[in-house]
View 1 (cartoon, rainbow, N blue to C red):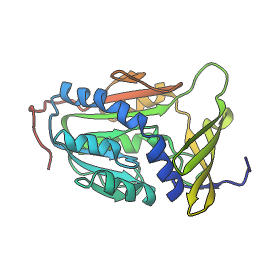
View 2 (view 1 turned 120 degrees about the vertical axis):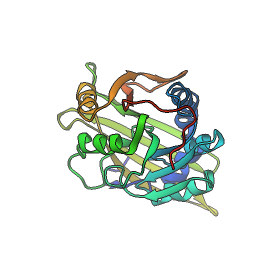
View 3 (view 1 turned 90 degrees about the horizontal axis):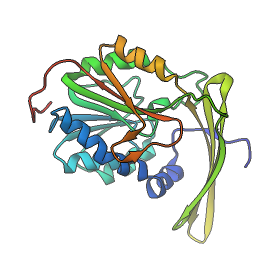
Length: 257
C-alpha cells in the first residue's frame, strides 16, 4: 500500500464502499440502542446522530417514530444518508462545532467522535462537546456513543480486505502509541464503466482514555455507565460504549421539537 494517502473525511468512493459493505455495525447496534431509549422512557422525540454516516441508524430511528437530525463532516456520506433516510434532516459539519437543538437523545456510532479532522495534529477536547450535549438534552435524555480506547496488550496493527459488486477495499491500521492514535490507510477500488478507479485516504482516530472520558462526562453533569456491547451486538476489540444520562425525569413518549 502506498504511503501517500491523503487525509480525508470519506470521499465519494469510500463513502459508497462503507455503505455497501460496512453497515453491519449500525444495523447490529440498532436493537440494543432502541432498547436503551425505551428503558430511558424516550419513546419519541428528536435524536441527534453525530457522525451519522450513510444514514442506516437514522432510518432505523425514523421507522420507530423518532425524528432525526444527522450530522457528518463528509458531504459524500450525507448524500447517501439523504437517500437512505429521506425523512431525516441532515447537516454538514463537525460534531464538535455544530449547533445542537433541544433533543431527547444524542448518539454517535462507530467511534465517530474519535476521528481527527483532516490535517489536525490533535483531536478536539471532549469536555466542551459533552457540556453542549448536556445543555441540548431534555431532562432524562440519553447520550450514547462508542470509542476506541486504550488497552494493556500489544498495540493494534492489522490489514483487512473486502470486496463486493463493483468495489474492493484494502485497509491497513497501525496504533501509534506515543500519539494515542490509530492510523488507518485505505485504498479503494471502484468499477467505472469498463475500468476501475483507485483512491486512497488516511484516517486518524483518537485512542481514548476510558477513565478520562467518564470523568469528563461526569464533569459535564451526566450519570455514566459503560459496556462492550449494544444489546446483543458485541463491539470490536478495544471499543467501549458510553451511556450518559442527564439527570431529571422524562415523561414516556414526550417529544422534543
